[in-house]
Length: 383
View: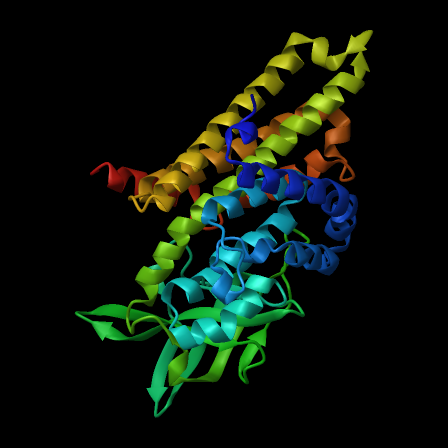
């Protein structure tokens, strides 16, 4: 019995629905958008129509009334065929809308969540800076209170979903003072189009080419005092909580990529012949694919466990870090092995495994590098 068949009916139905969408809508245009470096607006509109952007949010805010695990299951299915589409959903939900849901006032939720949960608009998560990546506490963007406004100056980089035609909101961290010599970091809601907010030209990336990623510049950006998100000085702590949750979602995406490499390799190994028989009949190839399947399975169990703890209200920081670590490495290892199974064809961009090979590396970097995950795990062990 498959893992999906052992889940409750509402989850298995979601898996079937998203899997069909991924195969019939996402996969046919994935290579085209990747090659052209274009944002897949038509695919995003399809995901919005299905309610995927609202999966873990209450119906009162336009959501589907589901949970975070449902989001993860959808991300796994999308990640099998196109990581760019999967990260667009992941960032739109866990990084774009979730900070408003977790820390926003009721007025902020009523204003922003219906737009974000419907998928009509996207939100972005402005944390990383040129000098503050893994060391997010090194934030240099500043926000100064002037009357009934905050004035923000600084820059952000590698911000997903920040420059699309449907981007409506940037949630950004900024230093608002110092306490005991340490920076006091707060977070702010900055609507797209606010004067002084500049979306710089998109990056040229190794992978995730259909995902929207830009640097941002804040030059005397003024927002109302009511756009403070959460408590003054608690922005950094709040964003760390968002990242803990987001690591489970990224893990699900990575498991999808790892499993996608397995599925493509099995299909190819059955069809491709060498020395008079399918290459899958050769033990070297069969064992390589078997090891790929083992990696994907183990990584899936890891994110399932982290998600279960989160939904039960139990501590999950260590398990989320473990899931992010093992799943991102599984995705990268499986992409490399799948490319080897395909041989010369694996080096050609028209094959999905080549795209996974380029896309998967960022999974070991984004939302906390491998080294950060190891540090978190070691700390949780008391080291």
